[in-house]
Image (cartoon, rainbow, N blue to C red; front, side, top):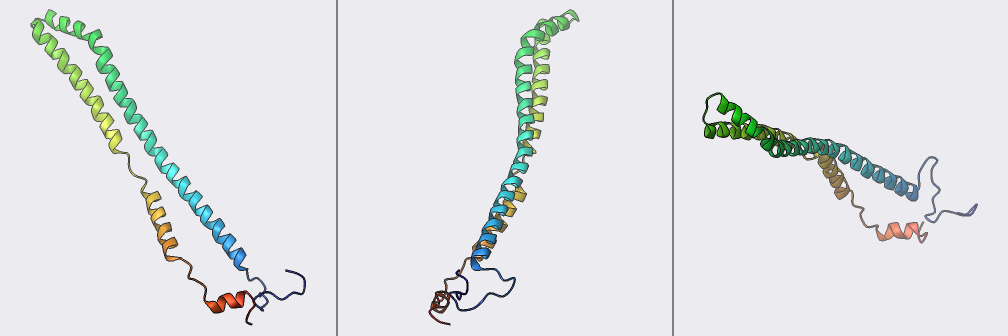
Length: 156
């Protein structure tokens, strides 16, 4: 505004009073900061669940590798060892197969336990819902004709 010119609404701002533009800029900056904080919170919560998921997946992969790679390696040795102790060959191989099923079951149980610990990001969801409620209830009302005329300097 030029020096000495009257403001469009005909009133001089009080000392320390902010203009509508400054208020809008502050609100925009705070909303942007809020969105960035919500995103950071979501990342932190999801990161912990990704780690849990990685551990569970690793347990599942290890279970698969153990079940597949160890069966041919040790099955015959265990079965023939049991047969050497006096158990018939058929029962020796059945006992060895059952032992591997138990090991695979234990590893699968560990995998499921880690996957069940994965939770939805509750704090992020609650924060986003609270933000949405505030924004939903903070809708600006349309300006009245008198407010528009006053802002444009048509009336004093």
